[in-house]
Length: 60
Image 1 (tube, rainbow, N blue to C red):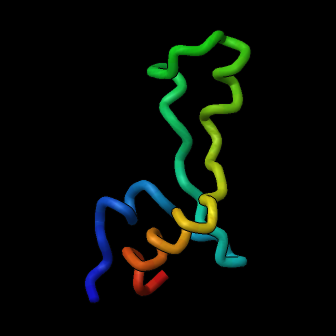
Image 2: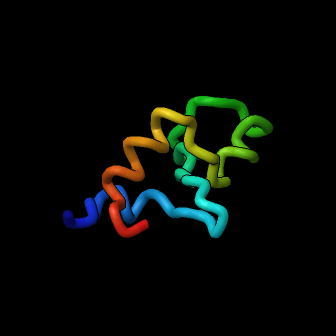
């Protein structure tokens, strides 16, 4: 099975196997400046999301 390249560019797996996804673009978010500070970080994917992502990344 081939790796889904769109998923591979947006997601990375940690050494312990967690799926980290990129958060929303803070410049496009319609929020106040103080709430935008934490939006640039990567976030761990939830259970259902992580299962679908791992299906798209067979070698990961």
